[in-house]
Image (cartoon, rainbow over all chains, first blue to last red; front, side):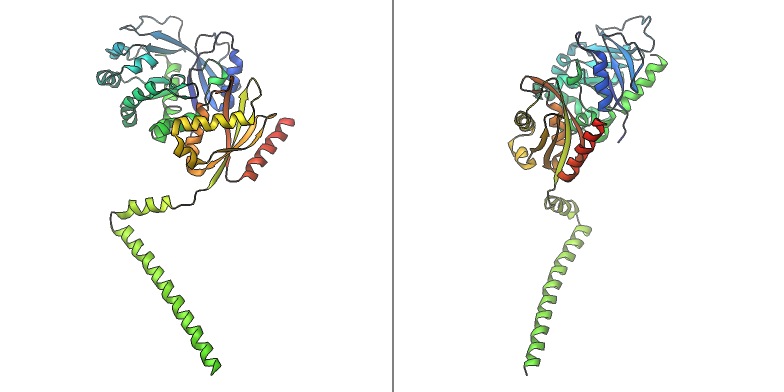
Length: 208
Length: 162
């Protein structure tokens, strides 16, 4: 199994020390982490690559300029299922589309087709899936609608932790096991943590 | 006279043993030819798989938390989470138990049936709280015997001391 695990969404809470989160991420075996909401001082921490991430809310069209955002991971967040339309305008304008919990709740076939046609990887968070030591039923039910398309390779999936502190991080092997138990093949589950995020990281280096 | 009787008895026993052996071999051969020649391959493989002996596995894990977590609470939470996700029947089949837990080092060993490795890993990943304490469970190694698991912990302990 590849050991190039990447977590593309770490958003520390205000009172949390970023270095502690990064230390645990490194201990868990991640090689790169994208951090949002905090100024990243160094690009490397104990051999762990750290990059900045910027998330925009998608309101029907992309932001026109990304001044001063070179070498940043640019993500568009969709928080309503009705906003999953005309996503082709985002092609070449962002690295990733994050599907928030509410957006996944009301997802329909036409929305899935829009996601398929835009050909941009989508990001789902484990934090949305797990709630109070169990799995969120509503989220899981709608995740199963996406599952066949992900398995077929029509939609590329990236799974991130969306961790606010070190306890909200998840070990990559545990995440792969969880995805496998949810019905994804081991290959696709591993790709969601290694292959696809690494491809995005290479794109970040060359700009959007 | 006695000598002849003994010889005949021995030959009778040998003949009977051979007959039983041939009968068994014949059955096995028939099973094999059936498996190779027809659609029964998957069925036979599944039967063999289901009849495989269930082996034990021991997973060494580390608990990261801001407060000390008790062994009983942790075991209860692991079982409870597994039950919530996979149900009572799977929990009984997996036969999960916390074999060893060092509260000072926050390292433990969890025992389960080998076919449930991914399910146990997944449920350990889902555990975020034990009581009111936030926790992160990190799987370190899976072994086939408790001795090897404890040896790994001992080596790790020595590494930490040095």
